[in-house]
Image (cartoon, rainbow, N blue to C red; front, side, top):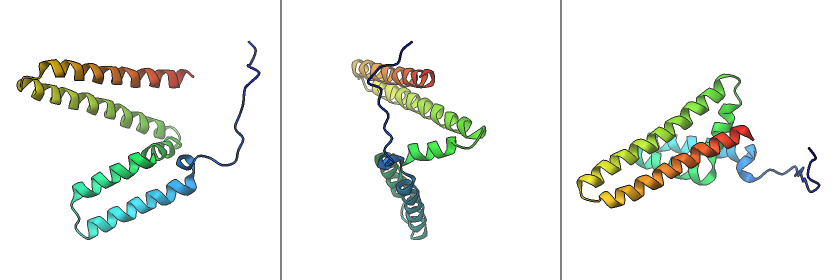
Amino acid sequence: MTEPDNFEVDFSPRAPWWRNWKVMLPLWCAIGALVWLGLHFNVDRSVIAGSVVAVGLVSNAFAWLLGIITLVPVIGPIIVKVLSIGFIWLLNAVGYLVSYIAIRRGYSKDVLTYRGITIATIIGIVIGFVLGKLL
C-alpha cells in the first residue's frame, strides 16, 4: 500500500485550548473551589450540580478529566469504559421512562418518533465507538 501524497501532520507546539493542561487544570481547580464555597455557604446542591455540569459540558472539562483518568495504567481505561457504558444505559432508561409517561397520556405517535431518534443516537454512539477502536 502506498501512502497518500498530501499527508499532513500538524507539528505546531500549540494545542487547542480544550486539550491544553495549562487551561484545564486551573479550570478544574476553580470548579472544585467554587463547589467548596457553594457548600460552605449553603447554596442549594442542585444549583451547584447544574453549574458544574454546564461549565463541564461547555468547556469539555469532563472529556479532559476522562482522558487524565485513562492515563492511569490498567485500571484507568476500565474506569472510563464503565462510566461511558453507564451513560448509555442512563440515556436509554430515561427514554423508556419518558415513553411510558407519554403513552399513558396519549402521545403514542410522538413516542415512536422519539424512540426512533433515541435508538438512532445509541446506534450512532456504538458505531462511533467501534470505528474509533478500529481506526
